[in-house]
Image (cartoon, rainbow, N blue to C red; front, side, top):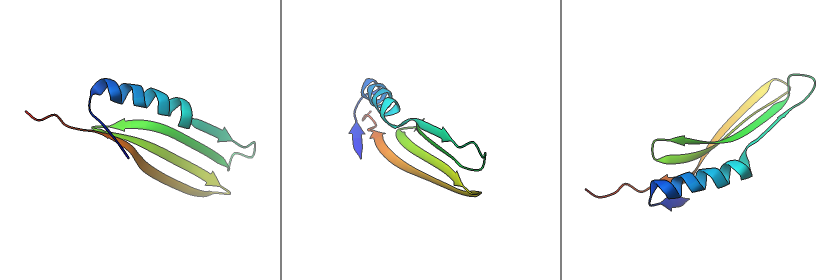
Length: 72
């Protein structure tokens, strides 16, 4: 996991990870598909993966980075 110190580092990291990890694939049958994306939630950057194969759906999430909060 990466610790980011500034919002500009966070934005740059999101841009790089979006190019690297965003992927979507759908089969012609309609029951099989795969979607992977990078999202931002509060101070975390999360990699989400959701897939379906023959009606069985799987989902996972992994924290790629966190934004370190500044001391006041």
